[in-house]
Every structure is written in C-alpha cells, then in structure tokens.
Image 1 (cartoon, rainbow, N blue to C red):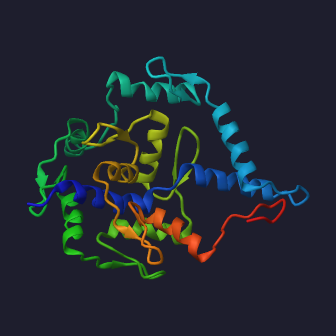
Image 2: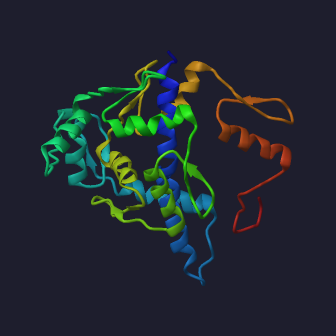
Image 3: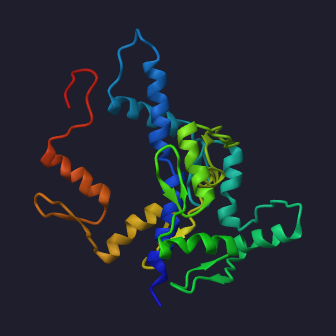
Length: 261
C-alpha cells in the first residue's frame, strides 16, 4: 500500500486550488480599485496601498481572546472563536436524520470509507468516488470555456463561476462574497481561528491544506523543481517561477510614482 499522506494532500489541494483565494490579495485588490476609482487623486504605489490597508485591517480588531491573545474584529467573531477553546459543537440543524448522522462525522472524525489504493479514508461514499480520480487520472468533466478538465461535476460547477463571476455565498461576519460554499467555510476559519490541518511531524496546524503542503517540505527537504538555466532546485513550483524571473529579466511590479520596476 502506498503512503496515504501525499495522496491526501494532493486530493485536498485540487479542491483548494479551485476554491481558495488569497484573503489579503483579494481584499487588497478591492482597496486598490476603490483608490483608482478617483481620477483626480494620484495613485499610490502597491506597497503604500498595502501598508495602508494592513494598518486599517489591524485597527479594526479590538476584541481579544483571553485564552490565546488573538484579536477579533467583533464580539460575535470572538464568541465563534472561543469554540476552539471550549470544544463547543456547531449547533447546525438538519431536516433529515441521515444528514445529521453524516455531519456528526465531522466532529467525531469517523471515516468508514477507505480507498483500496492508498488507504486514505473518507466520511462518505461520494467523497471516496471523487478521490479515486487521483489514481485513475480520469477527468471527464470539461469546461467549455477554457478546456480545463475535472474529476467531478461539482468541481466543474465551482470552476465555471470563475468565468461568470458569480459569488452567491456571503460571510455573515464581514460580508465578503465567494463563488463556492466550501470557500466560505474555509474563510470562516479566519473568524473562528480554526486550523484543522495538522502536520504529523511537528503538530503545527494550518487553516488550509496548501499551507500544510508548503510546510511539509521543511521536514522532507524535497526540492523537485529545478531551474533549466542554472540548475538550482526548489521545493515549491511558485519559488522556481519567482527565481526564473532573474534569468528572464521580467519585473512585474511597477511603482506608480516614478515608474521604477
């Protein structure tokens, strides 16, 4: 049997790559759009805009957790966050008993459905079925806009919203909008402070699977991405892509005040 850990990360990563957006980058883009909407004002550089944005964001946080010192932006957010320390359940309700039973597996950690290829376990049959695409490589659901393919129709449905711009799911804490319900759920961890993805090497926890994947390279020392020009190796593809700009001379970021890149 193959080690289920890399498989688990790969499976989770496929979903989070579709639904995860960088909170800071997206909110910063919104700030920049508002700023540039004023034609008479001289545009700020990205660095100044980012610094101003971060200062305002931090200033909003005035409710502090007495258990861990974390600052939250509202009393309601603080109450949600306290569940991390008290172990309080979510009080979510369902119209059918079977749905409640399935939901309770989130809290109990029960995963009765196991993949016969890598022994990765799932809480329901549907998730196991979707997971098998990792092994088979079969992705029958194709986007008619860009040609990208997916192992499950639900993934395609989520992806299609990147073309339509539809964001029907709204956070009741900060009114931020998302294209997928799972993206909203991941976002809510910012308010509650939950970090469900734990490293099995050092017990460090993360709020998303992609951050855990990046962290694991600290332990494995793997550097599978090599520069074709100088041969330097990197643990992450993003790091390689950033490095390659040294050779190509590409400079993406320009100062709006002096045009320096």
